[in-house]
Figure 1 (cartoon, one colour):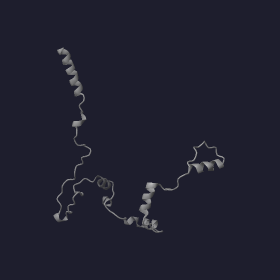
Figure 2 (cartoon, rainbow, N blue to C red):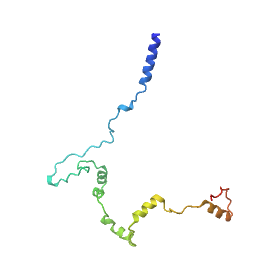
Figure 3 (spheres, rainbow, N blue to C red):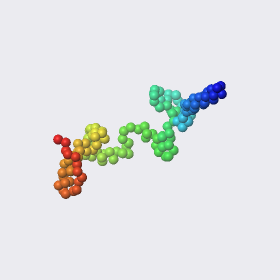
Figure 4 (cartoon, rainbow, N blue to C red):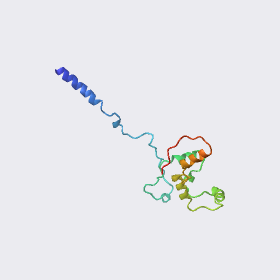
Length: 146
C-alpha cells in the first residue's frame, strides 16, 4: 500500500510540475530594442545649448533615420523642416494655378470614409430589368421588397 501511495505521489508531483510556465520568468529587455546613445560632448559654449524640453528630443538621443540620410549623402536637416521647400515653389505655383479649394482636406477625408462614389449605389432590381430588356440571360432573382 505504501508503494502505491509513493507511486501516486510521484506521478502527482510530476503532473503538477509539468504545469509550470517556463516562459514566464524571462521578462528581460529585448536586446534589439535597446539603442546606444550618442557620446556626450562638451560644447564650445554652454550658452549655445538649447533650452530643455520635457518629453522632447535630447542631443544624445539616437537618430537612426537622420544618420542614414547623412551617410547616404542627403541633408538630414530637411527632416525637421516644415512648410514648402524653396525647390518646390515652381511645382506649387503650377498645381495651384486654378486656385486652391479651402476645404480640400475635408473633401479628401469624406472620400476616404465614404468612397469616391458615395451615393451611387446600384439598384439590383433596376439593373436586372435593364439587362433582361437587352436580352441578356439572367438567373432568377428574389422578388423586390415593397
